Image (cartoon, rainbow, N blue to C red; front, top):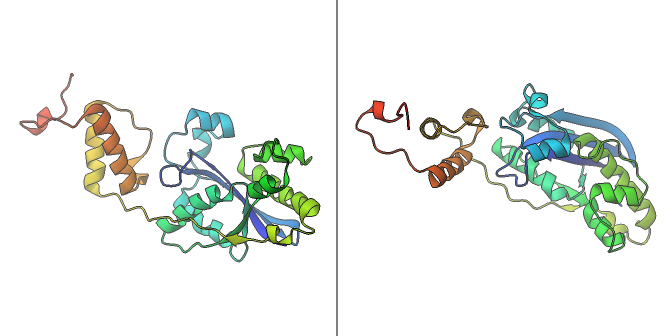
Length: 249
């Protein structure tokens, strides 16, 4: 059975590592079953945090405005978990975001891991809910602040230790790390022309921007341009530059 690992939890702007951003990273290094070291940081997503995410996590725009970007912290996060398997509740979600951030920085990141959600599905009664909060309540594990990364990472580690204590004997193979498989493709850098095209569309259609183009990849800008054109239309051809953005429409 795996005795040493790094429990990881992320808070994000939504689901999908290709389209959403990391808001918070937390990792807890566990050595021989004992919590040894932690890493925690908020991350500036350079976009407005959706209201439902604020309600879920308590993380507001003002809390991350001075936080480092993911490009500034990803290398430190990868170094923290170097040499250890990862542990998480629905681990592939967190791993996918970390892998995407690593690939975007051209950093190698391949890990083995253990998913406590899979263990809960294996050992808990079918009728019981299996999310982290419900699983911790079922096994009598106290959570300090649900849906904040450090508290959830700590809770996940303690959940694993309790699962291992109760069900490990006779099921040792279920408590071994396995390769994590997530295919991430590097997002291309946005060109000056892409950024200008986006800014022109926003200005012409008078759309308030909730993200910063300077921190968007070429893929993200392309997707946003496509959405704007689909919803509002292209900028009409003009006889001269002054016609491009009429004073009144």
